[in-house]
Length: 91
Image (cartoon, rainbow, N blue to C red):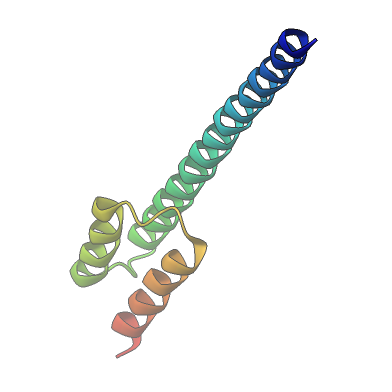
C-alpha cells in the first residue's frame, strides 16, 4: 500500500512541476511580447520626434541610452525618459 501511495504522490508532483514549467514558458512569452511592444513604441516616438524636428541630439542620447540599458521592460521608466526629453526640449 505504501508503494502505491508513493507512486501516486510522485505522479502528482511531476504533474505540478510540468504545470509550473508551462506557466513559466507562457510568462516568458508574455514578457517578451511586452518588451517588443515597448520597443516599437519607443521607435515610433523617436521617428515622430525626428520627423517634426523636436528631437535634439541630447534627447536622442537619452532615448539611445535607455534602449542600450534595456529600459523597455517598465512603463514608468519609459515615462521617465519622456519626461526628461520634454524637460530638455523646454528648458
